[in-house]
Image 1 (cartoon, one colour):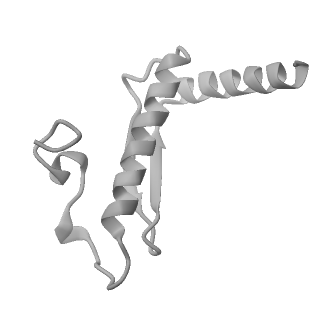
Image 2 (cartoon, rainbow, N blue to C red):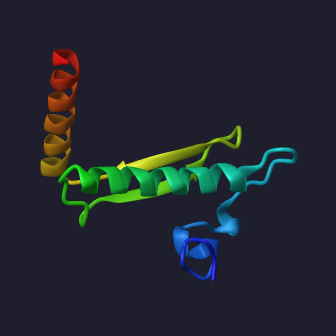
Image 3 (cartoon, one colour):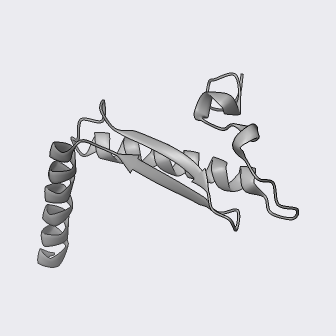
Length: 95
């Protein structure tokens, strides 16, 4: 069992056969960082009252080895998230 509770990287969308390995670039570290960031983002959205059951984050690695997260969400959830962020911005300006 891995740190994510699964059987390994394949449980999280990592397919070494679809990867180009570049000498000297630590792609796995970037991918793991992106996985962690995606989980943290989902947790923050859930804690903010956003229904995350239909959301999906996916970790990727950029050519330089840094992580990247793709967030997929329904249009209604995107609007709800926008409203939440705008409210936080207004609250920040008011304080």
